[in-house]
Image (cartoon, rainbow over all chains, first blue to last red; front, side, top):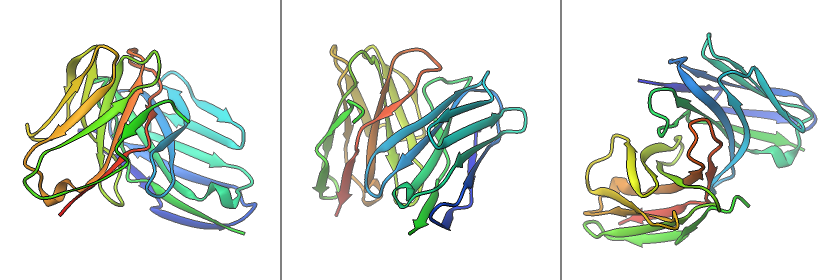
Length: 113
Length: 113
């Protein structure tokens, strides 16, 4: 059974700091890994999708890496801003059942002005 | 905006009642998945529909059922509501490839009293 863990559960940083969010998964047989942002009480906004054959993806100030063999992904946020405050979730889509994405419980980020 | 819309946004029901939640998928997407997200946790996979057929199901009882229509919109039905069914219900749509990106709606907040 695939398990996804995100550490830390919460993180508070001053504005302008670079930071890294971590995601680990137990089964390396995945099709892809996707990072999402969720504002309180809202739906999920897709940030980055990394296919199993890729090592990293970049979008603006965000960079996500994937090390499938070790079951790890990181989301790097450069020059953090108060508007980045949200919960960040990672989800893996396993190779055995393409429909079922397994999510971590997220990291809640607060960026202080 | 992802193009995935859910209705209603909020709903209050009494224990034992039945509820229907609706999802309109993004144009061109033939696959819809439903998730339940309890407060402070990551989304849990309920089931997935591909071209009007259920092709994946998570660990949810049969009182959770669904439909997908020819225009690829979808419904989630929950019978005999329990207090623990109170959650944010999310739908996600994507094209049918196994490695495609999932786009989420804003969710329906269900409260069972």
